[in-house]
Length: 306
Image 1 (tube, helix red, strand yellow):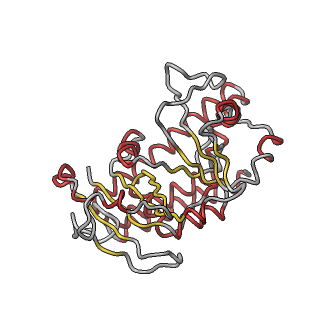
Image 2 (tube, helix red, strand yellow):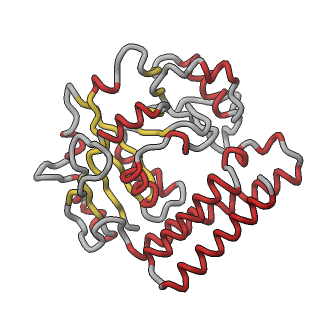
């Protein structure tokens, strides 16, 4: 990026900061400021995909990009922190009971139901009952429907609710994607745990009720549940951060990829020898068409306050 463009971004950041701060010291304003700055960094000044692929750069450049990555993480944490001021993004004063969001620009199959769960009521699991039905999530599953869940922070949950799923904002070096995927699972408890393990102070779980006939069909998805050899190939390619163009092109026909998670940790960091994590499942949305189908199928959102 040209130096002039960088200066313009810096100037814009400073203007937004001064305007917002002087206007009023309000949590919602600060939250929007943090979100704006984060978006500027993510799509403008610095690019996370570039940061992920630091191996090809000189040592000094790698160090700079790694520091930048931490800078981005700080803004992500600031976004989470300022959500503690307003507690919940919708109907902040209504807690531990379900309410319905007003219609928005996304044409959904049903109005989205939301519950704000405060710290004291989390243990009672009041969020599992909806419209007099206990364990409502299991009740959504039948011969015509599947249920998928996605755990994240408040900020990102609100972004998905209001703007829809954007597969191009996916993280790099994942099991079935490299900057171009949105992940869902079928384990609600894991979806509740996962965001906190990634540093989100206040977490949310989105519940999607999907019609099987819309999701599945001939050649719509790539199922790696029982194909360990191809699963290994995909994970190695995507986790490398430099998947071959021919390999990526061979997957263009699929709306989604599903299969076990890879067990990657400090004890098993080598992408050349990934192992399947027993008893796990994930579905990676790969196309805009599939993302829009999930947007229409959003059923409920649970916001937790730590």
